[in-house]
Length: 302
Image (cartoon, rainbow, N blue to C red):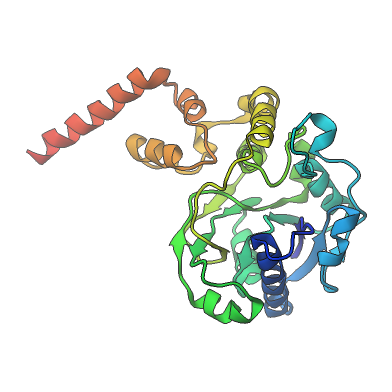
């Protein structure tokens, strides 16, 4: 099995959180590849802009620099060159012939067994995986502390930031001009996998990745947030909607109240959209269904 893994590093200001966590992420990737080398062929890639190249260690291939960004598709009062998600993934597709492609956010750290675990999970007739991270204490701040980070079990996180899929799926994905590093990129990624993967699995009960810090939602830059939200809701979702079947959503096998609660608590799902797929229109109908379940439960407990 061949897995090609890409990240999107960037030149961060000295002393910033990003300048701290990127070397930790890269070292965890190196360790995980070394751990898996006898059983899994792992290719490591990074892509960014020319000024980002010196952030990448020698064991990772830095692909030809990106030539465009979200700034080419909008006007922002505080310009920042966020790459387009489609450009990052297309760079990986053209660089590698690997059977599976993998994208993780730059602040996602791997456990040593990560690639070996992927190997086992993907052998189960799976064409796509989404892996939830765990959040650990913010007291860690250096590569030398990785053994302690591995030992910190942390807390579960509901969002999505690690995506694995068969390479042929990329040709079906719809990303428009949504950018990396801003909310709604993970929403778009998840819904593309739901739409086009035949056997998508959400892995939310294994300790395979972690993040320094336990926050659920990062601080928002409203302009870039509005851009990504508009790209998703106005351009991407309408194209995906015909392919989104309720049975393919994570948690769809749970009883109605539990799955709705799971979707409501997860920042990568738009509650009104999944309720539409349930055939439910509006909060009044939702309240009726929940009350119906609650009263039925009370009857059983009498």
